[in-house]
Amino acid sequence: MGGTVPAELTEQIDPHRLAMRGTQARQPHCVALQGVVGESAHCGIYAQRPSVCREVIPAWESGAPSAQCDKARAAYGLAPLTPEDWAEPLQPQSA
Image (cartoon, rainbow, N blue to C red; front, side, top):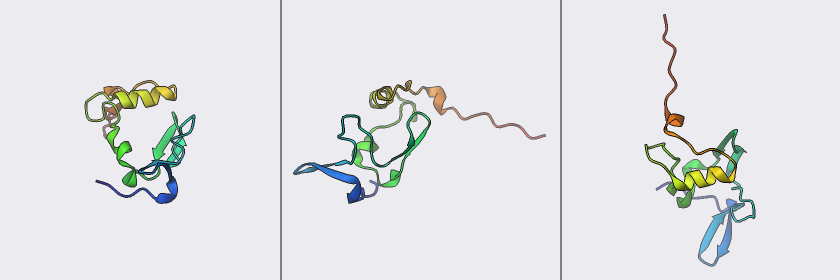
């Protein structure tokens, strides 16, 4: 499933595992994360993101909570997502 993470964005954490650069820091910040967390941020290699990122589903995106998502948001002082965050905005009706 998905692509291959570009090698230059990874670092070796032991003989058998790699991690995204920046995620092993005291204050983790993935090198592929673009934008400002809490304002407008996205994964710069979304189609190629690693399996660990694919496993964290945004809370309520598919109708279910996500403890991992809530924990990651809390680390940045963000409130947990709610079902309402995924509701489509009403479209103005044309006359």
